[in-house]
Amino acid sequence: MLSDDRRREIAAFLRTRRARLRPEDVGLPRGTRRRAPGLRREEVAALAGVSTEWYTWLEQARDVRPSPATLRRIADALRLEAAEVQHLLALAGHATGALDGSPASAAAIGPQLQLLLDRLEHCPAWIHSERWDILAWNRAATVVHGDLDAMEGLERNGLHQLFLNPRFRRMLVDWEVHARDAVAKMRMAHSRYIDDPWFNELVSLLRAKSPEFAAWWDEHNVLLPRSGVKAYLHPDAGRLTFHYTTLEVKGDQNGTLYLITYLPAPETDTQSKLESLLGSVPPSSERTTGERLPVA
Picture (cartoon, rainbow, N blue to C red):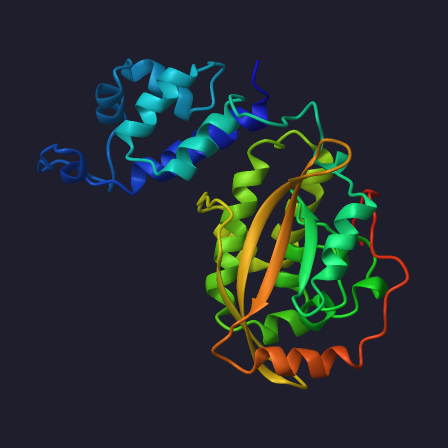
């Protein structure tokens, strides 16, 4: 049986996806008596091959348990993208991988992964959990994130830094674009951990302290991890441009972890600037943790 929170998330997600479609997007006439944008519930139900009453219950967060096949038909009717389909299935408890029975806090890393990070001497790299807690990093990562050793609790969380750390926010070029993407990626991960209090404490904190996070969270957009380019305006070195890649790795406790690597853009002077900056960064004595990070 789905929890109340999961049913509410499914209902809210479906309503936002239905509202963005126009009748002509799915081959239906617009008509003259349509009072609100988006498709009507009965139109989605007809396209998905389910009854209007049943679909209405789904959007009202009633106690129904849709099958994967039915959800895929609804996804087709709403023209959902691949990430959105995966998100919808996860919300309904049909995701592959860890669900609520295996909490996000179970992830931990071993010395081999730390050694890999350290070998990436001139490439900022770190490993974070599905909640974006930074569990391990190399010296070069401090150029981007600052002194991670000195951070405590949720300060050492990627989303906390992105939204609540003024230094990080000033440095990141095109902050809003990357912050919106981060919220969508967090939404994607959160679908598997809706009933996990440890995961929800971060969401609650960010919603309370960041108006941007709260607004974008309510849009229910989702995004899978991907590669791209990011630039930072470092206070000492100026503009640093990196090609970033996200790789999924397995933690020592079967948790899902993400390895983020930043390669200095070859067409820029980022490499030489990074080498100069690293000359002043002392080595860290301990850069791994498998502990749960409480709210700071």
